[in-house]
Length: 570
Image (cartoon, rainbow, N blue to C red; front, side, top):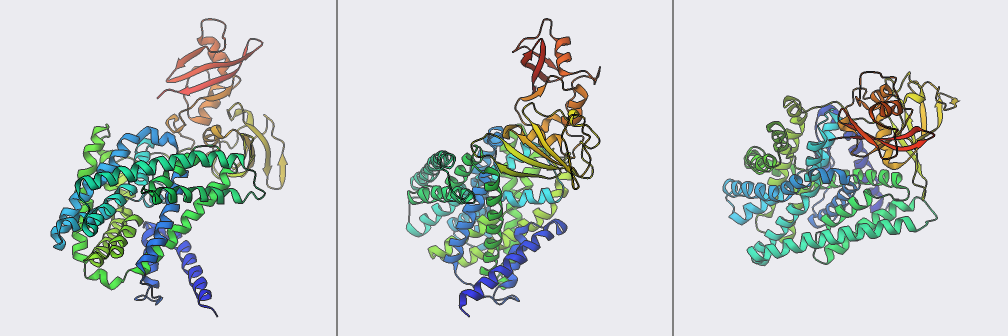
């Protein structure tokens, strides 16, 4: 048997154990990264597995590849609407927030460990970034939901603060090892890293969308692979010309994810699975790299540094920025607590080992311990803190189960399957009462083994499968209609116009979207409501404002209003 045969077997076992252990995350209240790290430590030379692994260069290469995949997937799933909503506070948290956190934590680390000041700042820079995936996987598993603005702030900050931490780490290592000038040299490196990374990321993203939509591949399964290759191209170009590859691949993902591409849904599913595989492999390998016994030598110092990071540095960095943008004390407190450290600090802790820095092993062990403490304590208490601060809300409007069957290449439409759960808001109501967007068509309904013709009089039941032809931009509205969240409020709807039939009734609108227009007559149609409100014969372009909602006449036929545009005023 060849050595590679053993390697494949071990890799398969570790990956399967990692996947199964992720199921325990929800029950134990621990971030999956902690479980994966523990699996790696148990499988290591000092654990029950006995696997000898002492290759920092290999771990760095694997970690960099995995982190690039994770950031790319994060970019693909980051809507530009979220970025536009909170880019100011999130960008300050991702830059100045990381810098302030690094300075305060580094100062404490230098004193606690007896290190030179620059070495302490290096440790502070390494633990400066937060982990978005760990935070929101915990929130989802615990059933915790917070408002969109706060959620977007945490997501964008966590997704975009890694390049700043990487820049500070690499810059300080250049100063310590290669005697680079601290002031002007670091400034030039910052401009080069961020400027080139941003330009390459957006440029490759734009070119990728054009290429993906114009090329016709024989095998549809190659489209997700092509998208992945575009992401790696962005990373490689930026890194090889002195820019931040991580910033570039994230921005490329954002650009591609917010544009219509061929086989989009299958591409997103492919990259989501790839990101999960990358997390498992990365954390298990990093766990293999550490000797658990070495953590006992730094537990007290690591505990003190973690306390400074969690209780002092993060709040001091967060509070002024959050207050500047009008967040209240409860929201600010949650963001200050959500400083969960994850994969990036451990990968960055390998850098001093590769640079041959004196005391690099001490820094690596302390960083590893700090990440474990942060992930365990903040991870397990995060749902409790969110509830105690009174920031939890009703679940957002999502379908009981939805699966995109296919994207119709050049046709700007999708066929989506919705499965109604045991208690959907649509159960017991007729299809004509669903207040679906004007361009939406229910193509088929299946109930058990029976195919039900989709007519307006068709009554929907729990367990029904609906195959819906829709425009991509209307997807959030239709998700709302077929979701379980009966009490959903209008704030959860996207900030765009909803086009409805003029025959849509007011009560159906309220039941489907939680929108409250008038209590006078729920049986009144939007056509009748507009006629009663307007002072003259309705014409295209006329509009009226009722209870924070704008209704506009979009189309008329024979004196009737056939299409109405509805916008929620925010």
